[in-house]
Length: 277
Image 1 (cartoon, rainbow, N blue to C red):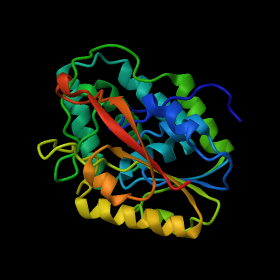
Image 2 (cartoon, rainbow, N blue to C red):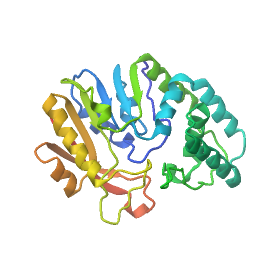
Image 3 (cartoon, helix red, strand yellow):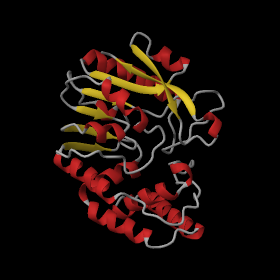
Image 4 (cartoon, helix red, strand yellow):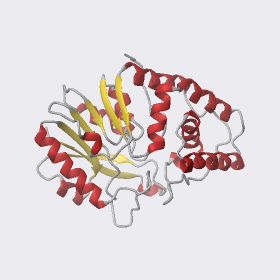
């Protein structure tokens, strides 16, 4: 198995890179299968690299990126390299954003869509992934004209891990992604967060967003899996609703930096790590 450090291929809202040490220190010492129903950028998965993993997300283009890095990594790298050979002017960025959105509209999930997703993530404002009500990517240009969009050796390491381990990749609702969880398995939930305040709008990473009802549904699933004998960890904002939904479980609070908040004065906050063990 790969022994080098592996970083996510893309920056993602709620990415766990800065909390990796805390998360890994609080993981169970042993478990059977690893489940991550909200894979996002995959920082935790790529840090611990379990031998048997079930990763999932509702964002079909994000899932396609993982599928393509597993099955067509060379083509993805070649397409990103070709994009990087052209100076990224404002016009070029928006033409590629439009091309990517056409992929979304047509439902095309291929190596080109994955390459565009990774490339746009490096050239869009603050590395946000956000879609509008139609499900189209709408983040503006970050004015970065030149530079490599990827670390090729890191992309190759991601692909090597996805191929060498038994990693099952799915695109479905988080509840459906957990139907095969059994006693002794470990599940890490890193869902879209409950907003910190009434005015803190949560940017949608998938069409439809993640509602209050979804958070209630997730807490009920947490309890069902607990009763099954699974080991569960969950991350979220440290807000009263979250503490209420998971009352009775172990709740730890940590200070974090919010690197993609549009307001630089609001780039600090508190998050909780909730476990049933």
